[in-house]
Image (cartoon, rainbow, N blue to C red; front, side, top):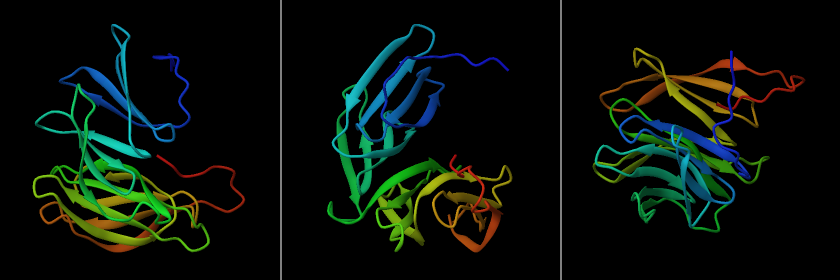
Length: 200
């Protein structure tokens, strides 16, 4: 395996890398600074936009631009202007949570979960945002540090990781047509004495 450095950055917390095959650009966020990056790896042309709140994750939109989990809500980011249009805000800015990792399912719904600032009393939620209808559903509660959402190749299962506690990877039965999840189970449990943390 050969590992190459594509860009010498100084991100505080680089997250959510997304390759856009039509733009031929790599997008990612600095979740803490906060900001949005775009890089053409062939020409090394780099763009950066400041974001108005902590930004956890992004995904490309069919009609251009990005959908983002930002602050306590979902937003569309116009490109190349970098303008942020908030679509849905679930919480007040003073609530002890903010959105973190997220990805799109194969039906185009954007799933993202929260980080709970109170680790002993987790208040984070998992949301499913339908950009076509600007509609948000709460899919799970009691999340501490949401990470790594993904689906099985046959669309039968949905997975996500709670990185802090209980340091588990969870699995649900998944219905692609409705977007419903059911029958939560622990897929992988990371022992407390293991130095590793389940993340992506």
